[in-house]
Amino acid sequence: CDTPITDSIIVEYYPALATPNPSNLYKCNTGEALHEFNLGYNTAVLLAGMPDNTRISYHRTQENAQNRENPLADQFSSAGNETIYARIENAIGCFTIKSFELLLITPPVAGNPPDITSCAVSYNSPNAPFRFSQQNNVILNGQPEDIFNISYHSSEQNARGGIDPLPLTGHLGQDDQVIYVRLENKTDINCFDITSFKIFVKNLPPVDILSNVTRCDEYI
Image 1 (spheres, rainbow, N blue to C red):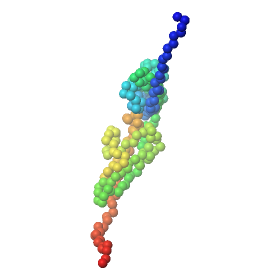
Image 2: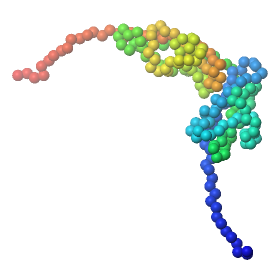
Image 3: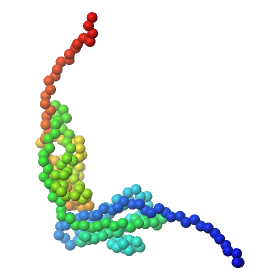
Image 4: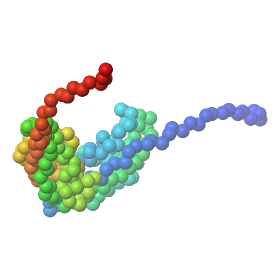
């Protein structure tokens, strides 16, 4: 019994969870006491590149997140200026905690973009290619592009509904057409402003049709 007995074990560590950082959530300040924030907006952000069985929960305190207690619903009422803690946990129980802010901002005001003229695709064609992205800076008018989305639409109804956006480049537009622009809060799709501009098609100049010319390449 006095002879010591020895054994050995192997201790292995799982790598730390590496997840993207969540985005701060912005709501337009309408003067109400409470605002509905969609915490679930960050679920897709945090799950990017993670295994399918990764679990996300949201909490009001870091302690609750550490202990996986009192999880919040995706739709969460807050007065704003509040920190939310996200718990990201894999199938074997390893987890990490990341935080983001619930913030209130002034509703967007879209700038007034100038009209655009582009050359027709061919002589007497009613269509021309347009690059709408050149209007972005004027429409943002100093407002941060990481908070707001810009989309372009063929009708005011589509712009107000945020549906059927036009391509930013290569759109074949017609002469004297109105393009409607939606400037939208990325994390509060009900907060937006609408502006518009016109596009014009400039015809190509006529070119004379010349006859073929034949010349001898060798003389005898």
